[in-house]
Image (cartoon, rainbow, N blue to C red; front, side, top):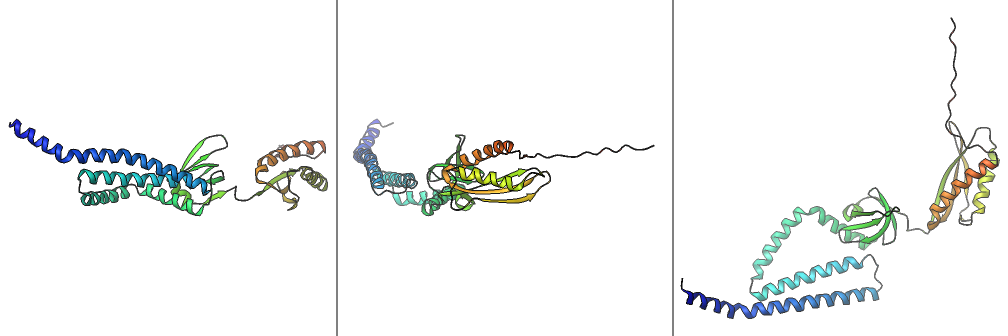
Length: 272
């Protein structure tokens, strides 16, 4: 082995690529610092512009990814890597990855649609994909819900953007529906008067629209009433549960029976 030639070649490589490599390293370090500064400035600008809270993580994540890709391409070009070939390879790889991750891209597109059209926002209570919960975060690919029993549910945005969804937070008021039954033979007018009074005495139940109470069904074991009242959305469940308890207590006090399924059995004695 010709050590002198190897040494000469190494020196030539250091002279040729050393400054480029050092410069690329410096650009990388400075670039990372600049990217952080840009993201910080962007965050402040979004806060100052009072952009929707659900849009901020998406814009920050997308901006960070684009800036880092741009920095990587810049550093590689400074080292001397031919970027035309690199971009072509990157494009082919992107196509292959896109085909392999079609579901992920669908979730990305769904996230964009959600953030643009805003069918829900952070803090809304929604029912989607078989889950009910409060939206705690809208990410690029997923939406995160917190259920009433404090579970964290991660739902891909693709299904949320294209599927059916119920948003319980878009309206300020909601209608509470009950079905209360009394026994056959009980006083219908008395039962209606009791339900009207209980609704009138509850300050959380709105006066407009008026409470609706009507005999809805002559069932097998009970005479059923449909009761519908409007409340502020935040009071929905409290009013629902409290009224169930009040009906049970007051019906007993007023001598109104709350029936349960019954069956009459007739025994016939065979002769002979």
